[in-house]
Length: 258
Image 1 (cartoon, rainbow, N blue to C red):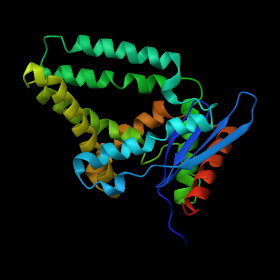
Image 2 (cartoon, rainbow, N blue to C red):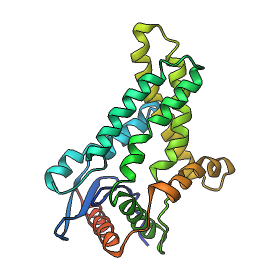
Image 3 (cartoon, rainbow, N blue to C red):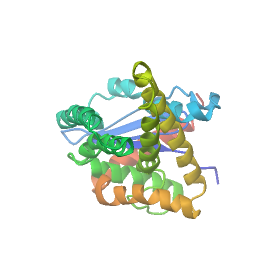
């Protein structure tokens, strides 16, 4: 039996994106009910990066860098952060975060509140339209491929598992950055943000490689609960068809030499 391709994905407002080591594919259901699919190659950067500080951020960038090409190939695709509602939540969150940082509270409390506020846009997008259903469809399609039996709508490699480590690392990093001289504070926060991403992705990688460890199960629990209760919903057969179309298109391109 040939080895399984390591896959990731993203739910859209009207479809599913699946990406592998070298390729991506997206399938959407148009307003007329038509199923449309587009696929292409990724710009692979992460394998050449060995630094733990850069490896995680580069992987995250690599997983979204092709989105402009996707939109050109499949203009019907509705990306999660394109809605007016989500844009409004982003603006409101930015204003509230600025206000929180002016509060005369313990620095750790302030940064923890700011980090929690940063989750609002993602949660707002997930509760709009069919996004949560397509998120569930994405997990079922990829999980069923990986485990060769009907998978659940929650997946052990969902990005929601990054939330716990990211909140902790981001809070600590921003508390330390806040102690920098005022003229260096913005740069210090930027470095802290990159560091939080780097640390979180390394922890996440360890979690996926050691799923039976007690600490890995504890760290994964918040992400699983978020998926189960908020971030995913049971998809319809038509939505599963869309996810399966994206999966098969990605696998077909991965099997084709570049």
